[in-house]
Amino acid sequence: MKIVLSSNPYRDKGMRVALEARRILEHAGAQTVLCLPFQPKKGDRLELPRQVPLSLLEKELPTADLLICFGGDGTILHAARDATLCGVPILGVNTGSVGFMAELERGELPLLAPLAHGMYTVEERMMLDVQVLRGSKVIYEDSALNDAVISKGSMARVAEMEVLADRVKVTGITGDGVIVATPTGSTAYSMSAGGPIVEPTSKSIIVTPVCAHQLAARAMVLAPERVVTVQLPRGNRKYLYLSVDGGKAVRLTGGDRVEISRGARSTQLVRLADRSFYQVINQKLGGLLQ
Image (cartoon, helix red, strand yellow):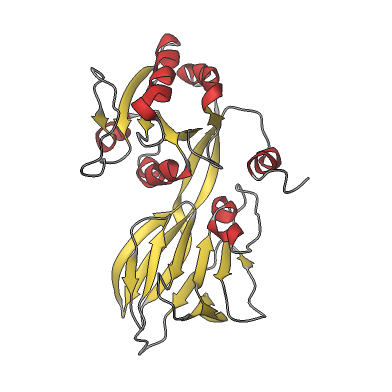
């Protein structure tokens, strides 16, 4: 059993949590490799462990049986696309703040030992495939585990866009933007914008307006087979921006279309602790549903 340990050094200072996990897993008989989830920013002085070899995630994932991420949800989201392409299940250990997708907290590391013997279950999470089309040309594509957000950025002016499902107009939105989310992403930005909480193993596409300037604007839950298109009016001189899973923003211009559909692949999240989704959200959200 080869297990890749990917630790966010901004969240896991000195990679202490990852090193403790490595000790537990190797004692249980697993082979481990330690990686950084991304290249550190230039000039950042990180507290990295001395005399511990660090490998590259893209090098180790193709031959890995399991990936453990140490950080917040952002660390898991960052790794999800590459891990999914390689068919590698992910387990999250929360060293951040909320950590909805993390299976364990840092104080629960002894629960990792059964992984060395393949003793775990896997939960399938729906993803979204995202494309930006300019005319008939695809100028950008990506995959999302949480959401795709089309927004006006920092501009004070409102954004205008149309939302279509299978080329039929669903609604027009005037406001700050729109979020198209998976059930996993329903507890992220979509929830903050007034969207519904959806069980993460469900199969659906959630469309949530952001600060809409319309009394009738409502979040909608669509069937997973729908193709959602967010279309900018032709001749529109205002730029909008697309961000997939909180990544680098892509600038959109008048006439561009963002097409979002159920992903061809699913992310596999490892489950060890016997906690239901409702226990998790009550714990993380401070008893919202009690």
